[in-house]
Image (cartoon, rainbow, N blue to C red):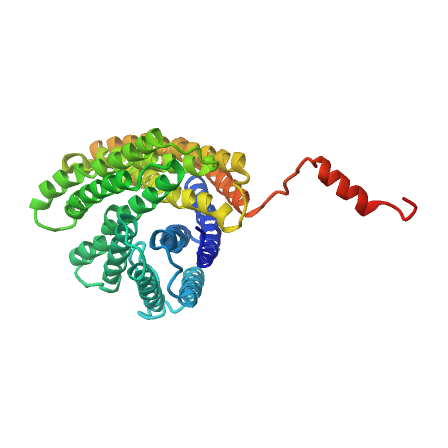
Amino acid sequence: MRYATQKIAFAYFGVAMALFALQVTFGLLMGYVYVQPNFLAEILPFNIIRMLHTNALVVWLLLGFFGSAYFLLPEEAEREIHSPAIAWLQLIIMVVGTLGAVLTYIFNWFNGSYFLGTQGREFLEQPTWVKVGITVAALLFLYNVTMTVLKGRKTAISNVLLLGLWGLALLWLFAFYNPHNIVLDKQYWWYVIHLWVEGVWELIMASILAFLMLKLTGVDREVVEKWLYVIVATALFSGILGTGHHYYWIGLPAYWQWVGSIFSSFEIVPFFAMMSFAFIMVWKGRRDHPNKAALLWSLGCSVLAFFGAGVWGFLHTLHGVNYYTHGTQITAAHGHLAFYGAYVCLVLAIITYAAPILRNRDPYNQVLNMASFWLMSGGMLFMTFTLTFAGTVQTHLQRVNGEAYMDVQDQLGIFYWMRFGSGIAVVLGALLFIYSIVVVRREIVEPGPAQVHRDHLAHRTPAE
């Protein structure tokens, strides 16, 4: 059954895809600055491009999560969204806040002002008024989706999704706390950054993936829900104390080295469980769903998340290894593949599934859509391998041999050129994906005998 208010989701997806295009474009510019350091140095410095790149990533993923909730909750709750007007108001607030943050970053407006200027915290550089706007939008959203669920059917998928979304909003409040003590600053900063991406975002990911598997494979809901509870339990068990792997070198007590090492080592488990879940659901499924592209993105999400967040995270999470590798290109390799696999692929999967439904058509442009998956994923994998090798060389030369940072950077040029090449592939794949979703090609249908007869009657002359 389809619900009229589900169409709100497409507006969220549209804004998300626009920011996605900007995000990968800024990423490509950053990659070029690595090989041509003076490029745009006077017009758009590297630190500004980086802020735009990382902030656009977070915002468009959040918009993707919001749109996903507005799409799947009516089907799970078996009722319309509680208030479409609130959903539209929330989107307007998010768009205005995003534009305000971008203009503040680029033109460095109100520098030094706590309320109007940028903040000096990575990923949380937004002016305070933008943070307040995001908080208001989050509260509106939580009220809207919670009332939708409370007044309708309750399912494991909707309950886990709500748990993740409420956790996301509550942890966001730590973005306002910026103590003068740099150790405390970093400790609470990780409450937002880590407990989002390796905590509550995993719950959102698991619930959306479970919804997609339910729709694409036809497996019984009871089976999907059992897997979902296992994934949620392992994600929370490992993710919360796994935050300690960020505490090794920021001045917190030494016991975090062991707590962080042990629990973060378990963080590979929920991602392995999600990958196993996705493939077992497809294997057990009885449905030959026509949207093969959505299934490809869903399976790709589970596999790349396991390798990016799980395997590449485990490679340098133990404190004895992290002592040498933290802050090197190995961190960048892990971060790129983890974000892409776990969350980018997830949002693109739900968009691929929902777009034909919201536009009342059969799945379209599937070949182009699947081509975009292989182009983007291939580019991201090559980028990950390139940065991994660059980080390995960097670790040995800089952290073991003790060579100067910039001297080492000069020796990594070949890796940065390869990273830039893979970035081109990612950008082309992203543009191809957006084209496959937005542009609907006209279908050519061979006319049957009845249609030929009607056309003849419509075009015959009076003499006939």
